[in-house]
Amino acid sequence: MEYKIHGTTMQTLDVQLANGEAVYTESGGMAWMSGDIEMSTSTRGGLLKGLGRKLAGESLFMTTYTCQGASGLITFTPEAPGKVLPFTLEAGQSLICQRDSFMCAEDSVQLEMHFRKKLGTGLFGGEGFVLQKITGPGTVFMEVAGEVREYELQAGQVMKVDPGHIALYEPTVKYDISRVKGVKNILFGGEGLFLATMTGPGKIWLQSLPLSNLAGKLARYLPTKG
Image (cartoon, rainbow, N blue to C red; front, side, top):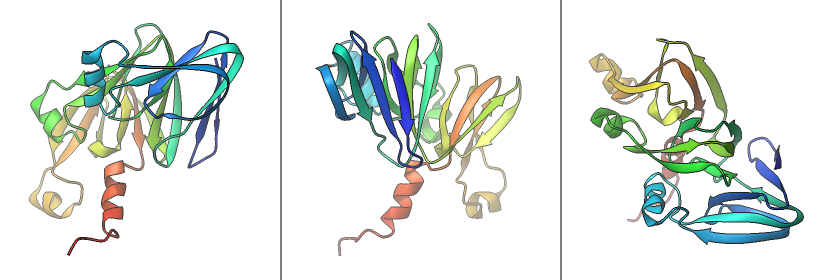
């Protein structure tokens, strides 16, 4: 499988498949394609796994695209302005991602829900109790709103983040929630009551444009019912 990412703020992803190669995406995730490509839609692993993915922000059904000819081209587009991030994962290697960030992946990659065990993290962590967990082997493509900053935290190194800016992170990173200190900071700081505390070792990817912020900004200009 070969791929190429085009564009800047409204990127597109071209995936070139050879005979027998396959990729899968959520229902409706494909933009256009050419060549002899077979589509197969299913719950991919059964109803329970499909419901788990639904809780993690994806569709109940997934569609697999398999190349039946010598080659085929499939193009995917993100749902919001931002970046397409490719990751090639080894067998057993995983990433923890925000809801609805999965774009598409090779057939060998596993997509499942990731449940936050801590009550505080689930309630105030910005994305709820359920995230996505991506596990290799294979190549997976994630879509992240806005620009992306990547940091590699050393053991014990801490980064405090507005939860909406967390795109994905390695499972070795400890994710917790801490309350903002000081009454004035809470009331007038504009950052909310809680911040995410991410402790290394491991890599984290932060996004510049949380979709919740964009939705809130646009809501000001939408007509309201009288």
